[in-house]
Amino acid sequence: MQNTTNVALSRLTAQQRALDVTAGNIANANTPGYRAERLAFSDFLVRARGRDVPPGAETIHFTQDRAAWRDRQIGPITHTANTFDIALVGDGYFQVETPRGPRLTRAGHFELSANGNVVNSDGHALLDTNGQKLQIATTDTEISISADGAISSENGRIGRIGVVQPADPYRLKAEGGRLFAAEGQVDAVEKPKMIQGAIEQSNVAPVVELTRMMRELREFEFTSKMVQSEAERQQTAIDKLTQKRS
Image 1: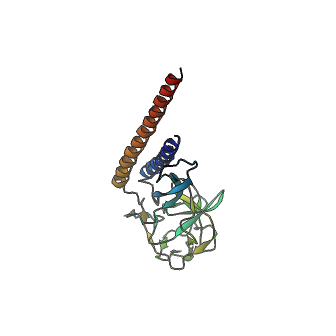
Image 2: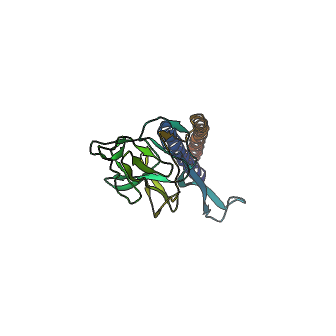
Image 3: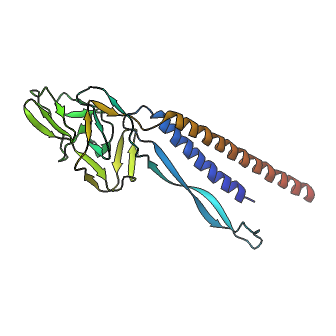
């Protein structure tokens, strides 16, 4: 008797998770470098027990939240003309130094700190191809960044921005809306493509996400009503059995 409710509750839990993920995507629609999160659901099969199992009900299909992954589609490029705004075109991630270690990001809005480091909006230093902080001297005033990430000024070459790619791009753990922790090896991208004075925006399409949320909300409400109806049916059956015994 409980199988119907349990199956519906598994679906309800999955729909709640889907709503949370979609809401997170919408909230980050204006976050530079953000990549939409997606979920993969699958059936979790359980063999029904008992000798009187009706035909077709030998296997119970529960809904399982199997995995989450990031949409790798590149977001639109916005030109800002700011010297340290850098958009990545193609695969790869910038690396920034955080208190928790190097983290990956596609958010290319950087600025010059008081001590000459190139940092993001959280103060995390951008790393070069050797994993070191990029340092700009006070005498370097005319900064140019080439398509391959080489930084130079009127005084000559300063360094080169490091761009890396995880060995498994689907094994990234999000830390907020801009940073990712790589679970596994990361490799240098030999020929990155960058645009100075531009930022890659979020790849979230708000209209699409709102439509997805409305569909998920309808499915959540439908499943909730199903659970409620099943609870009422079970209560009615219990009441009738109790009345007969009394």
